[in-house]
Image (tube, rainbow, N blue to C red; front, side, top):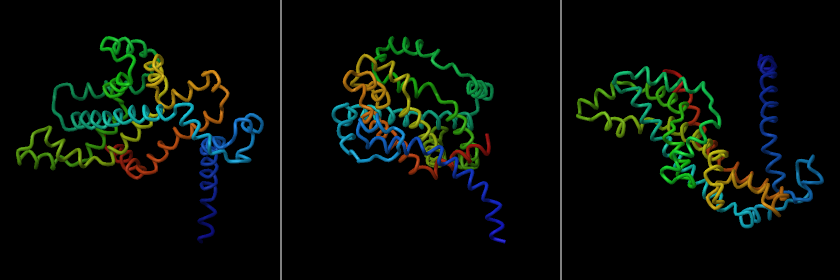
Amino acid sequence: MKLQKYLRKAPVYLFLSLFFVISFFPVLFTFMSSFKSNMEILTTANTIFPQKFVFENYEKAWRMADFSTYTKNSVFLSFFCVVGAILSSTCCGYAFSRGKFRGKQAIYYLMISSMFVSLGTLTLYPLLMIMKVIHLNKSLWGVIIIRVFGMNVTNLFIARGYISTIPTEIDEAAKIDGCSFFRIYYNIIFPLCKPLIATVAILAFRSSWNDYMLPMVFTMTDPKRMPLVVGIMRLKSSGAMASSWNLMLAGTAISLIPMMLIYLIFNRYFVAGMTNGAVKG
């Protein structure tokens, strides 16, 4: 019986294994190539494992290509984007889930409908002009303000759905004890939203850490303010460094490590937040 059970599931496991190999191969190839010399990359690009591991690639990328500065900028940008996304998403989700005000449903569905509208880079110039008025068009603070106050609709949808699963009896008991609407959010709802916070944090971190177009436009006049992804792409056209594929791959590997670690650490909360938020909306 057990053998028949395993045989029935064999196609599923085979498909998942194949999907994993295809998905993970670019990551493996990037990490292995980051340990190759530049000559080896150019002459034997079709091999996965390096003939000799060159650990100096990371040291050169960190010092010579100034990836240390780019990484600090990425951490700065991601930190404030994540904190802002958590506060804005949970506050708005709480307001739309528990709040009572005129036009709540209409406003919510109007915001959610924007999920199906993709403006791409059409809004880039207006956003740049708005930030220019307040003199933040050459700073990462401009990117942070746009990301935080632009409100990611996906995060709002997940937040409202998750908060709606929390029993309203908790709110009613808190009101009897004299808690205000905001005090209920701060002392009760927010501490109960750990899976939701982890989900929003991962989504916001991935978006801000991997963002290229907006930070590139806001920092093109000041390379010292560029985040890591923008700095890696800039290396392709930076004179003598333009042919240093070993340094670019080392920088790419550096940019992949934080995202993978964050997901592995918060994976359990991420899945819980996604599933709970999808139950009720």
